[in-house]
Length: 413
Image (cartoon, rainbow, N blue to C red; front, side, top):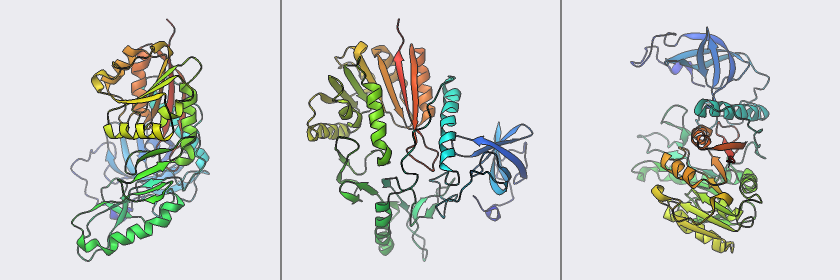
């Protein structure tokens, strides 16, 4: 929550004067939660977004921006608190931009995230979908196995700040302990902070720390080769590269994707955006062949390493060019499933066109952003696919982020 005393009363140049004055205080009831984690209410039919306000609360808020269809306001006071409001475990919650929901009871976080997926599909695809209850994380705190605190070269006679960005700012807030990080990371963090603080005079600029909790222990060098074992297989990769950050739920996600992709009618799996081969290798025992495709040569290198480490013989990996990603694949589409796990921005239209032309029997779409996932699935639905299931996973409790798996099947002619 922003301190109202820190705010200047002179409106900035961009401020729209309608419907509220700059820093006008209003009272309203919060009806829901937006996909960015903010409370959503209305006053005289006008929508107002209030971060850190919860559904069923009456609040006082200070308006700081009027947009074309809604206003944004800072929470000043909770007049009637929700019974689901709880005490955050982090002393800087509301200042640090990392978490949005520490003040909301976990069961309610799950309820609202499921609703948000339904709403994101409606707004981004025009589809009314049924979404399964979100798969909860076994741990509500202490689950995150990688953190990357930032630091800046301090001004003269100022302390070094090592932490994360303040909400809505590029400035940093100092973080000496992160409740959502694993215990091992929090035990190792003071030493890494001390190293920077003791050498800050030699710093020419700021940078980013890495603390990753892996089988080898806590690793801080992004170039180090590390290992993780979600499920039955061991995966090696470089510490700075992407790998799911909630090991307590990762195995369940993998098993779910394998179950969705590799039913009795599927003989071949094409794993696009395959990374270091997690889904490819995990599917290998269930089908005749698996082909992993990735544009990164480094990722393909580690995927091949992981196939050898796990003694997998029916997986092969190839570098795929976006313009002709399916041309070298010798699979029968009628007995194939394509797994998609793209970055947050979703799939390029050229890829979706090729996928539709290939026309596999089944598609399993794994996404860290249900909004772009919904947009892409609209394209696939228009290409004669139907959604058979949507299953969200709560990989990041206390935050707004949602992982979501959608399964699509080709309609019968």
